[in-house]
Every structure is written in C-alpha cells, then in structure tokens.
Image (cartoon, rainbow, N blue to C red; front, side):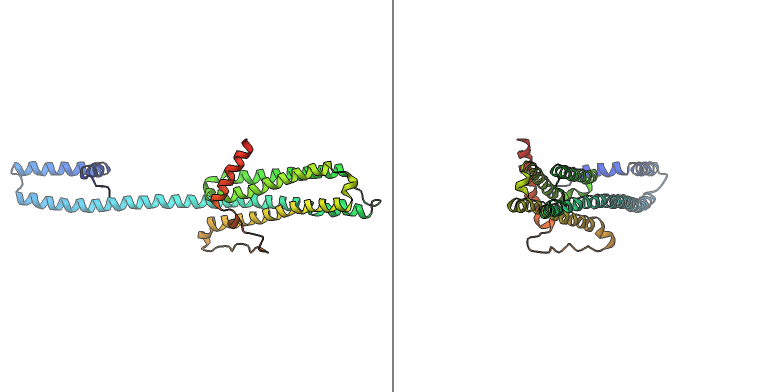
Amino acid sequence: MKKINIIEFMKVEFMKYKFICTIISIYLISIFILMITDVISISNFINNLALLVGWIIVLYVALVQLQKNRRDNQIAKKEEFKKSLEIDTFREINKSVTIFSHAISGISGFYRALPFLKLSLFRKNPTLFKFDKIGISQEIRKEHENLIQGLSRFLIAIESNEIVIIQFDHLRKYIQFQIDDVRDKIDNFEKYFNKIEKEKLISGEGYSEFKENCNEIVEYFTNIQSYLFDYRIVLMNSLLGDIFDTRVPMRKPSGPKYKLLTEVAIKEEVEKEARERENRYSS
C-alpha cells in the first residue's frame, strides 16, 4: 500500500484552498499579536481559536461538498453528452445498415433469379427467350459495383463514430471478412462466366454448375444480411438499452448451421484472422 506523505498532502490541500488558508493565517497572526501585546487575554485567545477552528471545519466541509457537487455535475454532463452521442451514432449506423442490407437484398435477388430468368428459360425455349452473355456479364459487374458502394457507405458511417462503438469493432470486421470473401467469389464467378462457352453453359452439366455457383453466392449474402441484423440489435441494446430499460431479443437462427454474429465473431479469433488477412494482402 502506498504511504501517504503528510507534508505533500498538506501542500496539496493548501494549494486547493490557498485563499482561505491565507485569511486564516492572517487572522491567527493578528490574534497572536493582540495576545502578546496584552490587548486580549489568553482565555479570549483560546475562545477565538476554538471559534475559528469551528468555522474552519464548517468551511472545509462546505468546500468539499461544493467540489463534490461540481464533480458530480461534470460527470452528469459528460454522461449526458455521451448518451446523446450514442443515440446519434446508432441513428446514423442504423440508417447505413438499412441501406446496405437493402442493397445486398437486391444483389442476392439478382443471383437467385439469374439461373432461372437468364438461362433456364432460354434452355427451354431458345426462340422465345434470349440469352445475352455480354449483357449478363455487364449486369454481374454492375451488381459487384453496387456491393462495393454499399460497403463503402456502411464503413464510413462506422468509422465516423468509431470511438463510440470501438468495443464492437470485431463484429464489424467479421462482417467485412464475409463481404471480402463473397467479392472474391463474385470475381471468380465473373471470370468463369466470361470464359465458359455458351454451348457448355446451356448443357445439363453446365447449367447445374452455373446454378450451384449462384446458390453459393446467395448463401453468402443470406448470412451477411443476418449478421447485419445481429449487428444492429447488438448496437441497439448497448446504446439504447439503458435508456428504455429493456433489451431487444436476438434473432433465432432457422437451423443449426446458421449462427448468430456474436457466436461466430469471437474477438480473439477475429483479430487473429485480421492480422493474417493483412499479411496475406500485403505480401
């Protein structure tokens, strides 16, 4: 245990109440001078000293309470500002999550419909339905750009308020990992689609492979949307739960293979993967 230095403590207390200590010192010196010059008696000096001590105690207690009230007010103002900042942060990020989730829903819908609307109908009736391979490739590229734009807006909203939600940064990183992975998947899918011959693509084996690739991408987006929903709920409960004295329940996965974001995004594992990915991309 750290020893208390009495002299240092007195110095600190004197500096805190320098004005009062100065007045008291002057008062004591004046009384002492009056006493030694026989202007006042020793008994009067003792009475005055006792009265002075009483007033010192009262003033000290009052000053301590005043300082405590001042600190409490500062803490209250700080908490009020912090809570206001948390509310604004949630409002901004919630908006970005909604927009991003909507964008992902559109991209996912594109890949979900792609095998049927662009290829299956053509295979069944080539004279009635067209199959524009170049046009489809352009649509794939456009949807990829939509994903990048949606991700950028989402990350900007988070980075702008990072100090408020830094404790949940591992959740954001895990979502970004999934988006990076699906972007790689889309890049490979685009290369595969541009390379494969039309005749092979409309064959039974080619169509099954094409559909399987699309379904894998859809599965990625389904998980990402679920994780975005989880992320929103975690922030809502953390930033707003105390205000309303309640918590919003987490979603219930539809099957054992589907997990909550908080179950898969373990902080230590996410940080480790972040370092590995950083080294991978920098090498």
